[in-house]
Amino acid sequence: MKAPPFAYIRASSLPEVFELLETHGEGAMLLAGGQSLIAALNLRLSSPAVLIDITHLAGLSGIEIADGKMRIGALTTHAEIERSPDIAHVLPLLALAAPHIAHAAIRNAGTFGGSIATADPAAEWPVCCVALDAAFVIASKTGSRRVAARDFFQGVYATDLHTNEVLTSIEIPIPGRNIAVRSSNWRGAAAITASSVFAAIAKNTQGTLSDARLAFLGCGETPVLARKAMAAVEGKRPGAEVIAASAQALSEDLEPGGDIYSTAATKMHLARVLTSRALTALAA
Image (tube, rainbow, N blue to C red; front, side, top):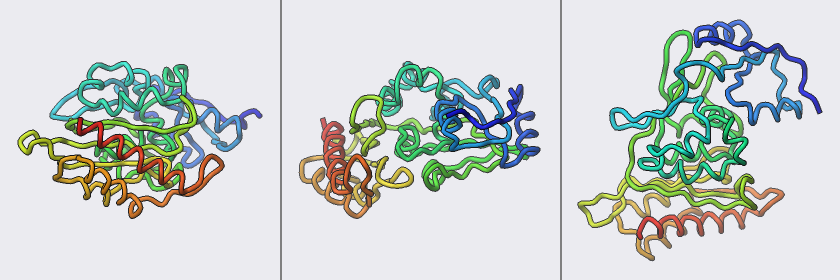
């Protein structure tokens, strides 16, 4: 299939983008990397009246550390995150997740912000951002606001981003140790279910877990924060009994649905296995 007809405008500044969004309203869509959008256009799952290209806007890409946070520009590509020594050092969860995103050609063009704004429930970056307690900086003609990742995702391909707004950057607090564990049919495929686990380990309490976060993709319409499982490990050392209790508590956190690849029971089993693996790795 071919994409439906649409107008194309390459924006040169954010103020121009805001004016275009105000003029065209719901008929406009932003092109930030296009790795999901172009496919949706060709399948006629999307049919914008105007496509606004923001891929060349200055100030919306780059990775920097300041004030105890990692700031990642929305137009930063997956490949830049994958190759960044700063990301590998302070946010290894992102470095571990990046190679699982599709294939190299897509990682070279697709963007961090584009993936987040798309809100695919099987995507890596949304669940990583929830696990890492990220905040999204969103700009409009009238100013900017910050939205916590856990509040941003509202359903399948649905977010708190308004039609007159642009996601400009992602801010992530510098955490303690963190790890990602993933299960899929093959490399580059969408995950069946995955566990992105973040735990800050308090050094003065002999390895007990503090502010532990477990987030899952593929278990709902949005990334799921497993609060009961998190409570089972909070303030404790991740030994065999604690790990088993956390995995068992997932039955109160997750309600995965079956699909053409696996049953709900299979997804729940995988979630428990992956949680156990991640907590075991943290305990090492």
